[in-house]
Image (cartoon, rainbow, N blue to C red; front, side, top):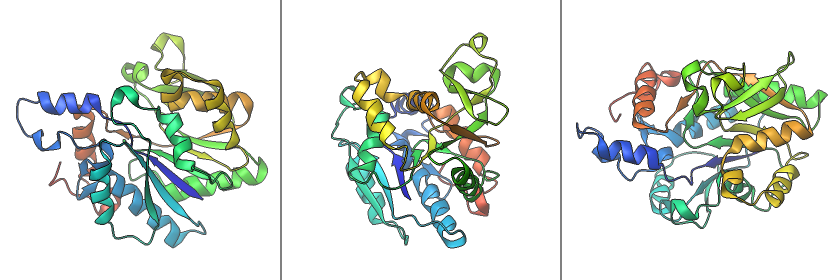
Length: 280
């Protein structure tokens, strides 16, 4: 299995919030890409590296490579992070070629960039601004996905997270049947447009047998709007095949200063018992 972490965003909303914060408490975060924001004792992306390490130690899961997709502007910061990593995992960086938010290729295009020339392996895609609470088990998710794949080869696997009514219009919302299969998806709908209150963050396991649909989607969708909202790919996958949503009790979405603070506070109790809040 290959893991692709999407880290090529520019975090414009977060940077705007940090720069506007009158307290000055968060001025040191200006210019830091969201995956490298300090959460407790480590950057956000390092928490994923730790979780992936833990899975390989305790589960029959082989992770051949972790690819972090970055942009030109922030690549030096990621290179510094990579140089300081101590991990048995192979962690590589690949660049999307963009140096500004206006020239970015879009998150779905970055998924393909992360796959590179290796389309013969299952891929776990992870949004670089997302963490799950410690109650979520990455190993459990992968075990459940593999069990489903044994019965339904080619099925894709995502997470479904409870979404408060007042935040429905900020997220991609999935509609599920009684087998937890995705039967509908709405990108940032008004609450009146759907009865579902489940968001679907960028955390997708796409098996090798289905990965070609990512290429096909990009071949038929040229605009940035179509290539940037990863949930639109989930909707396309669900129209063409089986997409199973696995429950998660929550999600930390580090997209704004408000949600960053909330994440730090929630993680203060210790994600896996190891997180501190000194740097938040």
